[in-house]
Length: 253
Image 1 (cartoon, rainbow, N blue to C red):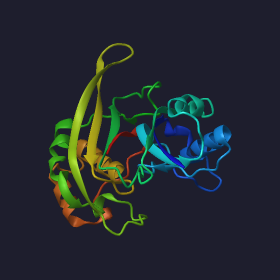
Image 2: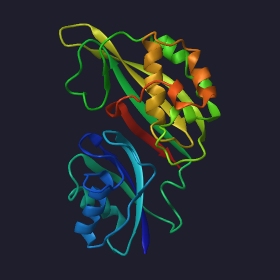
Image 3: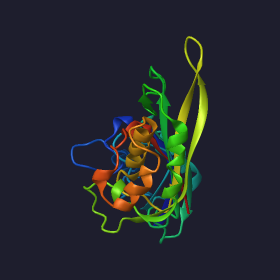
């Protein structure tokens, strides 16, 4: 048996998340189907994390074991020929039998993108959250530092989680502004919220972003982020931001 690791990208718009579910179209299902079409094997694909419905990945990491003798350098081309166009395998390598893409991951980086302007961008509508009014970016930025380090992130986790331990470590939490040209003249800033941690709870990034948006709207002060974190109560945080703005950016091993 060979253990193969891949880096893949996908547009999650049309899928019910990564993990296989009954009567649903998922990324994992499409990957396992592609492997079956290629080798005739029914493999179990593991991933670094289970992205939700509508969430995207720039560099998701997966692995599975196979008896196939196909040379590793041919795997990406062969899989891509059998995958839908919104899922692409970029790299493939053979790894030790003990490697597991989730258990071996040391750091993950997510990026959430917000477009704060009156009208949405038709070409990026599936990859960014459209906010039609002004956001106070500086207030949002001031709220981020308190999240760095090791904390109990219960306040930023859906109550539907099955994780008993909600302590995670964030190594980075920052905002990047990118200027975009508007049709008809003028410019708009695209807001990217980038977070890196040793792991993330269910909906954790989207709840952090939902809270930041309320701060940007002036509904909460920046200092409220610290209070929410210490409360360890989901009801204290803001809403869960919409899925389309979230992308798994990078996984480090």
